Length: 210
Image 1 (cartoon, rainbow, N blue to C red):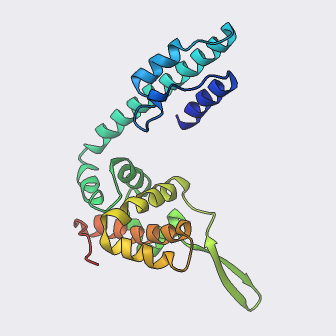
Image 2: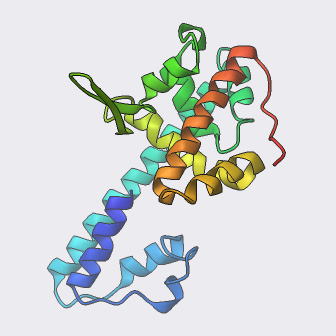
Image 3: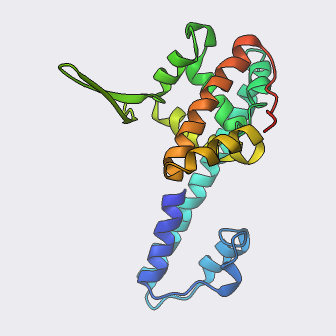
């Protein structure tokens, strides 16, 4: 959907059409009123109008697909197999329904991981190892692993540092010696431990005190 919105804006720029100032506020763009404005905006040629209309149709199709997927996700989250696990995992700061369902559907059974290190390796939240002869070293985060789970973890980490004082303290401490984009990866790695612990021992997560 983000790509499609960018295509529409790009098409407007190509046609020399300025977006009305009433739709420049963060929560006004892509509202029903904005879509109605897009449908009525005047273009110099019929082809330009046709191009915008086709892009709008595609965007609305994507919105319908997202709505269907969201409904299916909610139904699945209420099943006996997942409801209690999802409730527990959502007590971890930054983990919402979608992120929780991503992990539960991909992990399936947390008991297949002996410890949090194995879970981190499965997701790809471990550093790359470089070995040559007698020299051993570690690098940045490995390129192997589960891309969608890792992406969700990092997004959750940004929320966690705002909700959990201990995670925020850990993040700010790491920011003193590295860039924020690397510090947040370390926070995401700590989230793996919490996500492992909660379903493993069937207990709710409690925010720490800094």
